[in-house]
Length: 99
Image (cartoon, rainbow, N blue to C red; front, side, top):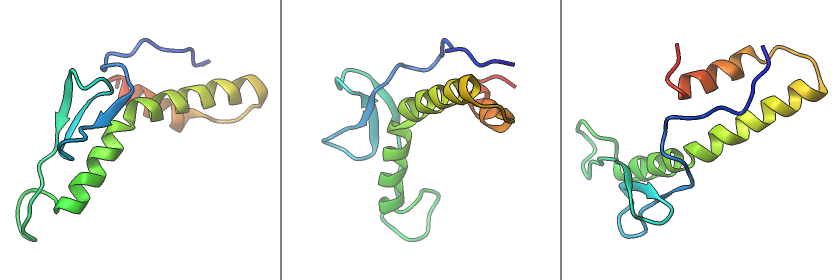
């Protein structure tokens, strides 16, 4: 099955970590909040420690770029080489909310 550029349901990127608060992910223009990450200033709690929470926001903010980079890589590899790309296609399907 050949992968084609897909129409995604998620808010288009790029996203960024809010420069005023490390716990918020927003569109690059700052007009739309995508998500908010909770952090715990204590070592015990239901939220990750602050350092991990900030790292989580950076990873989530990179999600649209990561998705499209993987999609482009799959298209390139399929066009130039042969091989099993099933696990990579599954990741993209998962990101699109498909089963």
